Length: 152
Image (cartoon, rainbow, N blue to C red):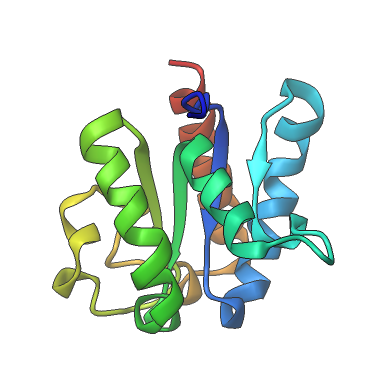
């Protein structure tokens, strides 16, 4: 029997079709990774030859915070909806994992289980609909929320 994983990392869930948004978030998180030793996990860390599903499951079980980059492609992803979201939402209920979701563009999020969680940024102003300067401000707000949750 294995020991329960320590929940000490930030799991980023996104559709690969939204990679540009994921890259923007990673850029804004980098100072926190470097200066505050924030542990981030995302699927690009899976090495060739690794059993990728096992790696994802291990990361899901170690997540203290789940950052969901929500778009229509995120919501329509079979993999996310069958493998990541159920685990994260269950852990939010049973183990206190924090769900921080970011509306990238208008989507049918209200038809999903994430609807009951407060978005980090206003849902009536998805990131795709605001200026680049305001997007940077929004990413800083996301980073501040991640830091606050990780430090509590």
